[in-house]
Length: 174
Image (cartoon, rainbow, N blue to C red; front, side, top):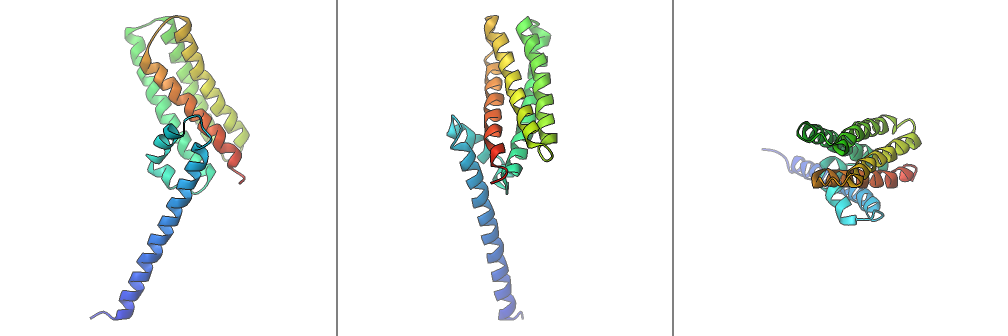
């Protein structure tokens, strides 16, 4: 038969783990809330970050930026594939421009992620360039009168993610 002391130790250990994970989750939620409240769409930001387990376990703004960049890269690669597939059946110039733009979006986000530890300012710049490239795609569509809502929605997500990243970086030192 086990002693009451072993039960007490097991209880306190479990309580410690629960309280530790609870305070980490609260810290992560605070990081997310702090970033999202400064965006143009708090609800959209929370939807993106609160739905991601890695974002919810981020322990610093730099960790949160890494997670956001991972999401941005995955989204940009998916968008690039979508546009390249569309280009096969719709070779209009605007779609070609978007294909070219998304090649640059993916490269810029990957560069940003690679730079974040050693040169956060360059990482920030690279993220901004990704947003500019998505904007170039949107401009190409609208200037040619081409309406592809799926691409426009993807452009919006890239630009919104860039805004989140630009808000996270200045907080690295805080």
